[in-house]
Image (cartoon, rainbow, N blue to C red):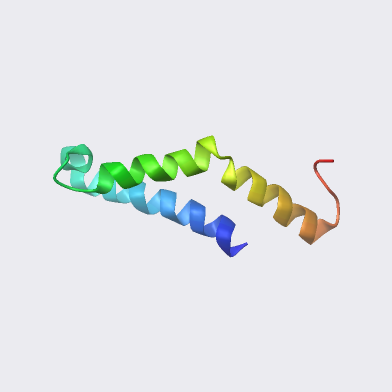
Length: 67
């Protein structure tokens, strides 16, 4: 559960940092843009959040959402 929550919190933190910095959030002067791209890749491409949700749901309910 902590690993699943960590992915979500990291995504929200990078999104907030990018909003705070405005246009500088995507400039090369700050690393926010790089972090934002990295966490989006983890969240979307690898499906980490979805897989963690399925695994935690199975552990909590005992019912598998996949076979």
